[in-house]
Length: 69
Picture 1 (cartoon, rainbow, N blue to C red):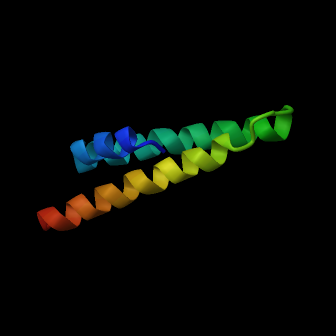
Picture 2 (cartoon, rainbow, N blue to C red):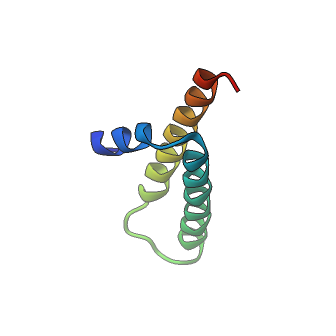
């Protein structure tokens, strides 16, 4: 992930981050299915998506805790 992605995520609200994490989860599922059914040259895509999802959820959790909800 690039530094710009981190700063963009820190600018989002927790609800938006959770929504983004859900979208990433769908992309991960689609990518894993593609890896099983077709020959994929770049197998790191799913790994990068998992990392982005983890960062989004971590930032969302930190923001929720900071708000005191």
